[in-house]
Image: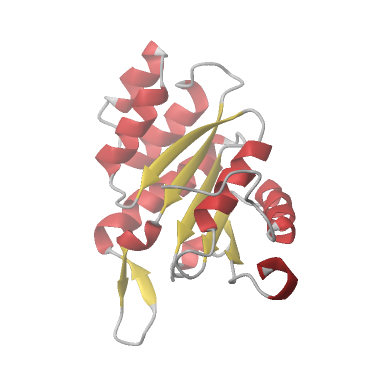
Length: 185
């Protein structure tokens, strides 16, 4: 996805500063807002400032196989590949990978789930919820990041905020509004 360059990035300094602060205190962020307001661009600028993190980007659809594939593409460790190809349940597999399957002990991941709205469905009451097949994968990822006790992070960009009770304590929600006034100028 095309994002604004650093030179084109204007009017989002407060959001960027708040996200940098909040990502230190949470497992990650859920950045949501209308299409075209700069969620992916804000994420790109945020990742530039997260020194020492390897970026893992999953665009749109999320499933267990896609997640394993993205992790395997970054993995040069034989132990890590064995873990990803093993038969453990997904959450245990991810936890073990994040603890001991890394290329080095210092390696840290920033897992970006971009345009995540592809994984949502609208309920009859107007609330967006995760599609049933995505719930277990997202929860496994978040629990694994939490359980491994290393500072890996998860950043989700979506047009819509969505309901999943387990996310409330783990992710900071940032509603990215359209540019206005002086920022727009």
